Length: 192
Image (cartoon, rainbow, N blue to C red):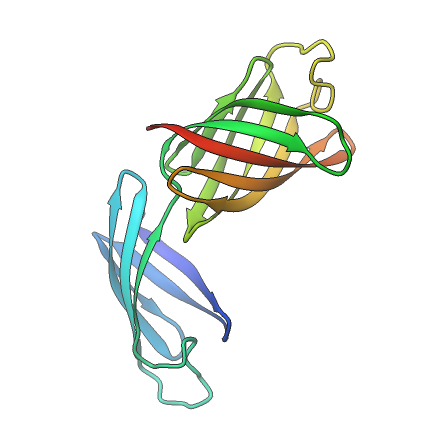
């Protein structure tokens, strides 16, 4: 499922660099204008771990290493864990209200809901950060109990951080012509 060609971006206090990485059969190979990337990965039920090294292939001094050394080996662990999460939403910007429900995260897909709404979407995650988008749909008329999203199919974009126990995110929803910000806290209830 992870196989393919990826654009990669690396950021440190020394700057940013980009390159490409081909991923196949537990191996990773790629690079950019000055450095080759060589490594391996393991995917254990959506919990991805990576060991990758850099090797300079272009001696031009205009291409400076991102971490101030030409050779480096990194061990990375990424991916929010698959599972069932509780979600607690709190509105921001002075809007009164919130909501609670459940969310299943599984291999980049989101499925969830509560007594009035269901939502589906997708996400990506690595190195403690995650982002994604989903559509919130009213499956049962809420009769004014949840007036902010009631009656609308709402597109939502979010970003935040995660740990083994759960995640947090800030999100922006578009309900009709209204843009609404809220925060969400997810707590892992069960492995998927």
